[in-house]
Length: 495
Picture: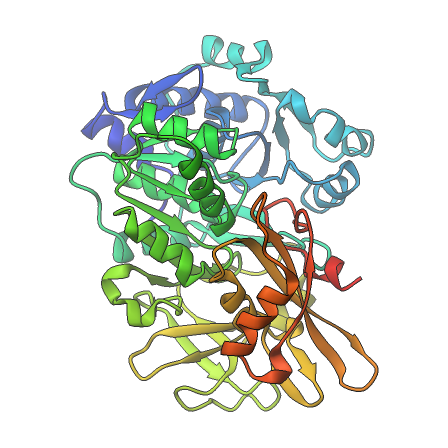
């Protein structure tokens, strides 16, 4: 294993003139990014930040975010990306746990940190961005600070980042992730590209997937194009203008992109593949992109388990409903949720993970850590199965399982059927109380604008493909409630 803190410097020597970061108003080569991260790291040292200290980042998808992240790692400090979609109350709760030495923030989020500033949530506050421009305070760092750093010893077991869970059902917890977690995956599980690729970073950078993408692209010497506006038109415009070759987004984003492609002509010929995760992409969505000549890959993991498995169309469409095979060095067990007994191939149980990519625990919360990390195995809380070929299939969260008169219904199996209906944009299935059966499934559906699709149409399709007890009630809604990462908050649908 190795560390992340020298990736930028390595490429500044190997490919100094390759673009590293591109945003709306700025572009920096690897040589320039190395100098700028050195200057920002010098500023942090001057501010009293030392190895192991925490540095918060509350910034949009623009060049300050990766610059702060990479500069923090250069001196062995620990970066804490913060979800800018949280309320001031929620951010204050996180900052009272973390207490960073310095917190960088965009002025757009000044109100969101008001409570935390009053309560001393950070030792020092530094404004970084204002709209699409740098603040004067942030710009001065690159005018005044030296671009040469003293060497810092950073080890593979040292913390690199603390990522707070998205909190779809409870208070976010800070997942402590080491340099070795990322570096091992990149060195053993990924291959550097022969020619630099142009990657579009549109998914919020505070998310585990996006942070990982920053490290992967810098490790590979790729160009990261940053886009703060994630609407389909902006994405397609950027793909065309910047000749984007790869990107990552949640499945719902790709569904809305398809709708925009039907309305207007866009040049997406540069796009070689797209990646998704966070929630399962439907087979229908994957096939629609394949029809455009664009392979869609997807990964399975969590903030705590990081990288578990991946699926690519070259694995065969027979496994399209899976989340692929486990990555190198990842062990997967399917255990009975009550007894812990290992389940035979093909049978559903709780997914347990052991790998070098696991988090080191929750920040200041050993009790919560002990509940999910047992004898070196992380308990995902997901119901899943392994087939004889080693493909992993996820049935859904155990806590979301619907018990219909004694029969188990996993929401994802109903959602997959409804997702195949052409006029469906999004769907979420939850269990609702029933006087006789205990629970029954209910599907909340967002249909395409102007669609004549009816509740009866959806029920009819479900009757063709699902057992009677799995047939859901159907409710059309204009949108689904999501958290700051775009994950559906099903507990709000349950009422």
